[in-house]
Length: 243
Image (tube, rainbow, N blue to C red; front, top):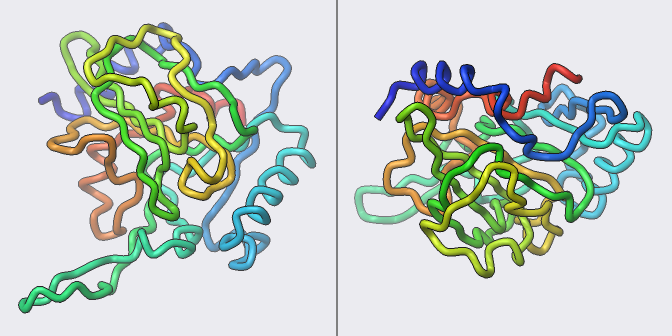
Protein backbone atom coordinates (compact mmCIF):
# COMPACT_ATOMS: atom_id res chain seq x y z
CA UNK A 1 0.00 0.00 0.00
CA UNK A 2 1.31 3.42 -0.97
CA UNK A 3 1.81 6.11 1.63
CA UNK A 4 -0.64 9.00 1.64
CA UNK A 5 2.06 11.38 0.43
CA UNK A 6 2.65 9.08 -2.58
CA UNK A 7 -1.10 8.98 -3.26
CA UNK A 8 -1.38 12.78 -3.08
CA UNK A 9 1.56 13.11 -5.46
CA UNK A 10 0.05 10.81 -8.08
CA UNK A 11 -3.38 12.46 -7.81
CA UNK A 12 -1.78 15.86 -8.31
CA UNK A 13 -0.03 14.55 -11.41
CA UNK A 14 -3.37 13.52 -12.94
CA UNK A 15 -5.55 16.48 -11.92
CA UNK A 16 -5.98 17.68 -15.48
CA UNK A 17 -7.55 14.38 -16.51
CA UNK A 18 -10.32 14.09 -13.91
CA UNK A 19 -13.97 14.40 -14.88
CA UNK A 20 -16.14 16.69 -12.77
CA UNK A 21 -17.90 14.84 -9.95
CA UNK A 22 -20.82 17.27 -10.29
CA UNK A 23 -21.51 19.47 -13.32
CA UNK A 24 -20.28 22.96 -12.50
CA UNK A 25 -19.40 25.72 -14.96
CA UNK A 26 -17.24 28.34 -13.22
CA UNK A 27 -18.08 30.86 -15.95
CA UNK A 28 -21.80 30.81 -15.20
CA UNK A 29 -22.30 29.01 -11.88
CA UNK A 30 -21.47 30.04 -8.32
CA UNK A 31 -20.42 28.12 -5.22
CA UNK A 32 -20.73 29.13 -1.59
CA UNK A 33 -19.01 27.79 1.50
CA UNK A 34 -21.40 26.31 4.06
CA UNK A 35 -20.16 26.28 7.64
CA UNK A 36 -21.57 23.69 10.04
CA UNK A 37 -19.34 24.43 13.01
CA UNK A 38 -20.44 26.11 16.24
CA UNK A 39 -19.36 29.47 14.80
CA UNK A 40 -22.45 29.40 12.57
CA UNK A 41 -24.99 30.71 15.08
CA UNK A 42 -27.77 30.82 12.46
CA UNK A 43 -27.82 27.04 12.38
CA UNK A 44 -29.81 26.36 15.53
CA UNK A 45 -30.50 22.99 17.13
CA UNK A 46 -34.13 23.35 16.05
CA UNK A 47 -33.03 23.53 12.41
CA UNK A 48 -30.45 20.75 12.70
CA UNK A 49 -32.92 18.29 14.20
CA UNK A 50 -35.67 18.86 11.62
CA UNK A 51 -34.78 17.67 8.11
CA UNK A 52 -37.45 19.86 6.48
CA UNK A 53 -36.18 23.00 8.24
CA UNK A 54 -32.57 21.97 7.58
CA UNK A 55 -33.37 21.55 3.87
CA UNK A 56 -35.09 24.94 3.80
CA UNK A 57 -32.05 26.51 5.45
CA UNK A 58 -29.72 25.10 2.77
CA UNK A 59 -32.08 26.10 -0.06
CA UNK A 60 -32.42 29.63 1.32
CA UNK A 61 -28.65 30.03 1.66
CA UNK A 62 -28.13 29.00 -1.98
CA UNK A 63 -31.05 31.10 -3.27
CA UNK A 64 -29.99 34.26 -1.44
CA UNK A 65 -26.50 34.07 -2.95
CA UNK A 66 -27.59 32.74 -6.38
CA UNK A 67 -25.31 29.74 -5.90
CA UNK A 68 -25.80 26.40 -7.61
CA UNK A 69 -24.07 24.43 -4.83
CA UNK A 70 -22.89 24.83 -1.28
CA UNK A 71 -19.63 23.11 -0.42
CA UNK A 72 -17.34 22.46 2.50
CA UNK A 73 -16.64 20.33 5.49
CA UNK A 74 -13.22 18.70 5.13
CA UNK A 75 -11.52 18.49 8.55
CA UNK A 76 -14.41 20.55 9.93
CA UNK A 77 -15.38 20.00 13.57
CA UNK A 78 -19.15 19.97 13.22
CA UNK A 79 -22.04 20.54 15.58
CA UNK A 80 -24.61 19.05 13.18
CA UNK A 81 -23.74 15.49 14.19
CA UNK A 82 -25.45 16.05 17.52
CA UNK A 83 -28.69 15.34 15.60
CA UNK A 84 -28.01 11.60 15.59
CA UNK A 85 -26.92 9.06 18.20
CA UNK A 86 -25.00 7.37 15.38
CA UNK A 87 -22.14 9.77 16.09
CA UNK A 88 -22.07 9.20 19.85
CA UNK A 89 -19.06 7.33 21.14
CA UNK A 90 -19.70 3.76 22.29
CA UNK A 91 -17.60 1.86 24.81
CA UNK A 92 -17.87 -1.70 26.09
CA UNK A 93 -17.43 -2.27 29.81
CA UNK A 94 -15.47 -5.30 31.12
CA UNK A 95 -18.77 -7.10 31.74
CA UNK A 96 -19.89 -6.56 28.14
CA UNK A 97 -22.31 -3.68 28.59
CA UNK A 98 -22.33 -0.97 25.90
CA UNK A 99 -22.29 2.57 27.28
CA UNK A 100 -22.04 6.05 25.79
CA UNK A 101 -18.44 7.19 25.75
CA UNK A 102 -17.05 10.60 26.60
CA UNK A 103 -15.97 11.67 23.11
CA UNK A 104 -18.48 11.76 20.24
CA UNK A 105 -17.49 11.73 16.56
CA UNK A 106 -17.57 15.25 15.14
CA UNK A 107 -14.60 15.68 12.72
CA UNK A 108 -15.68 15.44 9.08
CA UNK A 109 -13.42 13.49 6.70
CA UNK A 110 -14.99 14.29 3.33
CA UNK A 111 -16.34 17.24 1.39
CA UNK A 112 -20.08 17.78 1.18
CA UNK A 113 -21.69 19.29 -1.92
CA UNK A 114 -25.22 20.56 -1.18
CA UNK A 115 -27.72 21.10 -3.97
CA UNK A 116 -30.91 19.89 -5.58
CA UNK A 117 -32.30 16.40 -5.17
CA UNK A 118 -31.48 14.13 -8.15
CA UNK A 119 -28.33 16.10 -9.09
CA UNK A 120 -26.16 13.72 -11.14
CA UNK A 121 -22.88 12.40 -9.71
CA UNK A 122 -20.07 11.37 -12.08
CA UNK A 123 -17.04 9.11 -11.68
CA UNK A 124 -13.95 11.37 -11.82
CA UNK A 125 -11.86 8.55 -13.27
CA UNK A 126 -12.26 4.96 -14.31
CA UNK A 127 -12.28 2.12 -11.84
CA UNK A 128 -14.47 -0.65 -10.49
CA UNK A 129 -17.23 -0.97 -7.93
CA UNK A 130 -15.54 -2.03 -4.73
CA UNK A 131 -18.77 -2.22 -2.71
CA UNK A 132 -22.08 -0.53 -2.01
CA UNK A 133 -24.73 -0.53 0.73
CA UNK A 134 -27.86 1.10 2.07
CA UNK A 135 -26.64 2.48 5.40
CA UNK A 136 -30.09 3.28 6.69
CA UNK A 137 -29.45 4.59 10.21
CA UNK A 138 -30.74 8.06 11.02
CA UNK A 139 -27.88 10.44 10.14
CA UNK A 140 -25.94 7.79 8.20
CA UNK A 141 -24.88 7.77 4.52
CA UNK A 142 -28.05 6.17 3.20
CA UNK A 143 -27.30 4.74 -0.26
CA UNK A 144 -23.52 4.51 -0.60
CA UNK A 145 -21.05 3.53 -3.34
CA UNK A 146 -17.32 2.93 -2.97
CA UNK A 147 -15.12 2.80 -6.08
CA UNK A 148 -11.63 1.35 -6.43
CA UNK A 149 -9.20 3.21 -8.71
CA UNK A 150 -5.58 2.87 -9.74
CA UNK A 151 -3.23 5.61 -10.91
CA UNK A 152 0.36 4.82 -11.87
CA UNK A 153 0.06 1.51 -10.04
CA UNK A 154 -1.24 3.09 -6.83
CA UNK A 155 -4.71 1.88 -5.71
CA UNK A 156 -7.10 4.05 -3.73
CA UNK A 157 -10.81 4.45 -3.12
CA UNK A 158 -13.50 7.10 -3.46
CA UNK A 159 -16.72 7.06 -1.43
CA UNK A 160 -20.05 8.59 -2.48
CA UNK A 161 -22.63 8.92 0.27
CA UNK A 162 -26.25 10.14 0.48
CA UNK A 163 -27.24 8.85 -2.96
CA UNK A 164 -30.56 7.64 -4.30
CA UNK A 165 -31.64 4.05 -3.65
CA UNK A 166 -32.17 3.45 -7.37
CA UNK A 167 -28.44 4.06 -7.88
CA UNK A 168 -27.48 0.86 -6.04
CA UNK A 169 -30.36 -1.42 -7.05
CA UNK A 170 -28.58 -3.13 -9.94
CA UNK A 171 -24.92 -2.72 -9.01
CA UNK A 172 -22.47 -5.61 -8.91
CA UNK A 173 -19.17 -5.60 -7.07
CA UNK A 174 -16.28 -5.75 -9.51
CA UNK A 175 -18.18 -4.06 -12.35
CA UNK A 176 -16.13 -1.56 -14.34
CA UNK A 177 -16.92 2.14 -14.08
CA UNK A 178 -15.74 4.41 -16.87
CA UNK A 179 -14.35 7.93 -16.69
CA UNK A 180 -17.24 10.42 -16.51
CA UNK A 181 -19.95 7.77 -16.06
CA UNK A 182 -23.02 8.79 -14.06
CA UNK A 183 -22.84 6.65 -10.92
CA UNK A 184 -25.47 8.28 -8.74
CA UNK A 185 -27.76 11.14 -7.84
CA UNK A 186 -28.33 13.24 -4.73
CA UNK A 187 -30.89 11.22 -2.78
CA UNK A 188 -34.02 12.38 -1.00
CA UNK A 189 -34.14 12.37 2.79
CA UNK A 190 -35.74 8.93 3.13
CA UNK A 191 -32.89 7.40 1.12
CA UNK A 192 -29.88 9.50 2.15
CA UNK A 193 -29.81 9.09 5.93
CA UNK A 194 -32.40 11.85 6.55
CA UNK A 195 -30.29 14.80 5.43
CA UNK A 196 -30.94 17.66 3.01
CA UNK A 197 -29.92 16.56 -0.52
CA UNK A 198 -26.15 16.48 -0.92
CA UNK A 199 -23.15 14.34 -1.79
CA UNK A 200 -20.50 13.26 0.69
CA UNK A 201 -17.32 12.68 -1.32
CA UNK A 202 -14.26 11.14 0.31
CA UNK A 203 -10.86 9.81 -0.75
CA UNK A 204 -9.61 6.76 1.14
CA UNK A 205 -6.07 5.42 0.88
CA UNK A 206 -6.40 2.14 2.78
CA UNK A 207 -9.89 0.73 3.34
CA UNK A 208 -8.92 -2.56 5.00
CA UNK A 209 -11.96 -4.83 5.47
CA UNK A 210 -14.66 -2.18 5.15
CA UNK A 211 -17.35 -2.76 2.52
CA UNK A 212 -20.14 -0.39 1.55
CA UNK A 213 -19.21 1.87 4.43
CA UNK A 214 -16.23 3.72 5.92
CA UNK A 215 -16.12 6.37 8.66
CA UNK A 216 -16.88 9.81 7.26
CA UNK A 217 -16.68 11.34 10.71
CA UNK A 218 -14.17 10.55 13.46
CA UNK A 219 -13.32 11.50 17.02
CA UNK A 220 -11.06 14.52 17.32
CA UNK A 221 -8.55 12.33 19.17
CA UNK A 222 -8.35 10.13 16.03
CA UNK A 223 -7.71 13.11 13.77
CA UNK A 224 -4.11 12.28 12.84
CA UNK A 225 -4.85 8.75 11.60
CA UNK A 226 -8.04 9.50 9.69
CA UNK A 227 -6.95 12.75 8.02
CA UNK A 228 -3.79 10.97 6.91
CA UNK A 229 -5.76 8.04 5.49
CA UNK A 230 -8.39 10.33 3.92
CA UNK A 231 -6.62 13.24 2.19
CA UNK A 232 -8.41 16.40 1.08
CA UNK A 233 -11.12 15.44 -1.48
CA UNK A 234 -10.57 18.73 -3.28
CA UNK A 235 -7.47 17.13 -4.79
CA UNK A 236 -10.00 15.50 -7.13
CA UNK A 237 -12.97 17.88 -6.92
CA UNK A 238 -10.89 21.04 -7.56
CA UNK A 239 -13.83 23.25 -6.53
CA UNK A 240 -12.55 25.26 -3.58
CA UNK A 241 -10.71 27.63 -5.90
CA UNK A 242 -14.12 28.90 -7.08
CA UNK A 243 -15.32 29.95 -3.65
